[in-house]
Length: 65
Picture (tube, rainbow, N blue to C red):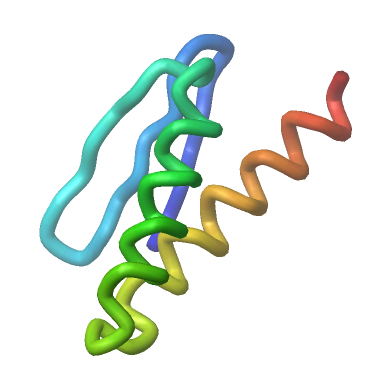
């Protein structure tokens, strides 16, 4: 999973999909993917890369503040 951002949006890019969201929605999407991981343990580690990418972006943005 890859995440990129500019001053107002971030883009998640997987192997066959991508989606762009406003930066202010980062906490919402991080909570969403963490919730999916918790609710669907049979999915194994399928959400781990997305969560890790979003957490990395969160750290980068916090460091710039």
